[in-house]
Image (cartoon, rainbow, N blue to C red; front, top):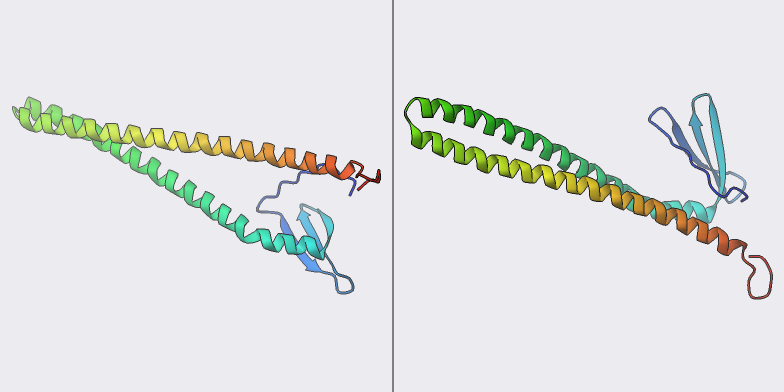
Length: 164
């Protein structure tokens, strides 16, 4: 193959089709996008490599979706806690004005605890998002470096002086 790098981004409107050749031990992948398409012909061993990698890729996608769902739920809970703390502070003000300082103090203490917990959740969400972005960037760099090394090694002469 002569291409050293190619990037294609697909969205929900695009489709991908993988089919085996009826006459050879090859397959083709057709990527449909808008009015056009791209065909990639691949050998059996590459199809087998895709098959072997697919469960891990799907598991990674599931983990990412679960992580997104957990972070989304955490954001909702944090918002609900902050709103509840705000309502508790208002009620504490009413209790204080009504001559119930013990009730006001209990409400304020609970509001402060809830606010601290919501703040901790927000910090954890930020940390997860930041760490995820860092890991994604590092993985992208590793993929690029690995591809560059593979290309370099592929083009390097072997011990006999022949190109590999």
